[in-house]
Image (cartoon, rainbow over all chains, first blue to last red; front, side):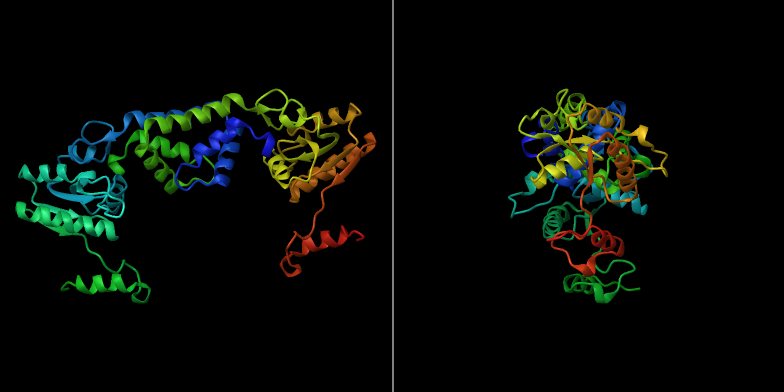
Length: 200
Length: 200
């Protein structure tokens, strides 16, 4: 509305556009929705945001999101605490948990090594992983960082660091996705799939 | 995370999913973004939402969004107050303003007549439009409701109501969009375009 635009609306649009996946159009639609919604409903939204921000912190053991000092997984005696799966972000924990096949614990790096973006091992939670391993109760580490350049670099770096500590350092399988077709696989994936072949 | 999911995160996801265009996936990404963002940034967002909700109201003349009793357009003496464009929502005002060709004022109906959804003329701002017209200063009303069934029904209803008051009731042009191609036009649009033909 050029000369007639409302400051408060414009400010909210700008704030919403900082969220992932929200462009100007979606931000405008959200603003109109907020304006048309009951005050109570809108308060429920802002309170939920504030709650998350004040309640959720990182688990002091594995860095996963937690509402208490130690997260539910680290606190669960039924899980295998000798097995640690290393992931880049709390989102990855959720993805692996959804597959319902893993019963070990986690270590969230909160990032990956990226020389291009100037992110080294000390900018992610590598030191606390090594400390956990040095306590001597961990038998195997499964490195489940992404299969992109950063994830691969992080996996290689961690393997070199973990092996001398006498702990098994494994990388998750990389290859053809289940239910996929050879013709859809890119050459790099195919090469890794053949390299990582196993006996049946 | 099935058994480990955090209440506060789950609540925020549910709240975010009530916003238009936000599914579970996008909601999760927004939650992770919020958790990774500075507290100050997040406060800026919640405050912007609260500000909009407490500051923005409907203009007492045209029902457009406004930060004061009367909106900027209704207050602008340089605009033609004898010409009123009737639209369904404040969003439509913004769209027309962006085209920068209209210099009259507006009347926002805050909806359209929809027998299917049980919305009649008294559920939208028709009465206040008629009151404005009866004051005798308006010369022409341009009905710019949508060209869907509800918008058309509303336009026909308004025309019947306005004409007896001695005021020109016009409907915006409906036909081929600028820069389009005859072969892309649907039969209904083509029929309306031919029906609404004008001399060059």
